[in-house]
Amino acid sequence: MKVAKFQSNAPQMIKPFVDGLEEVYQAPVEEFQLSKLKVVDSYRIDKLKSAEIIFVFEGEIMLIPENGNALKLSKGQSAFITNSADSYKITGKGTIYRAGSNIELR
Image 1 (cartoon, rainbow, N blue to C red):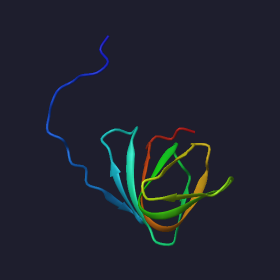
Image 2: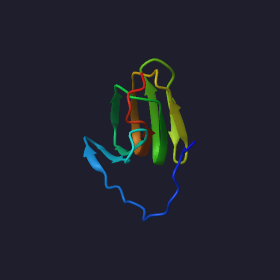
Image 3: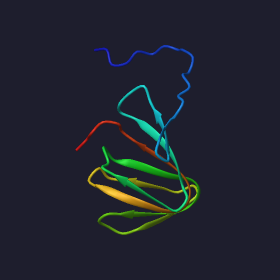
Image 4: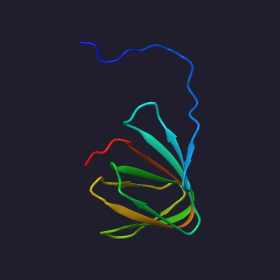
């Protein structure tokens, strides 16, 4: 059974495209997407396609889910957001990365 093909090649640099306040790095596969977001005051994430991992690169933010408890995160900390979350708000000041899927998993 063939599962994977291993071969070497030069790495491909992915340039982001701007979507509102986010820089989105679209991987050459649908299963993964990374975006960078500079939060200055408040930002709302609506209609999640899949579960996400939020990583705080710098600063301090507060994750406020639509239904649930707020979570304070500082530089170097991360949080997992399940795909059952419809939306959440980010407040504070900092730079975060969002890793998730570009496939609708609901």
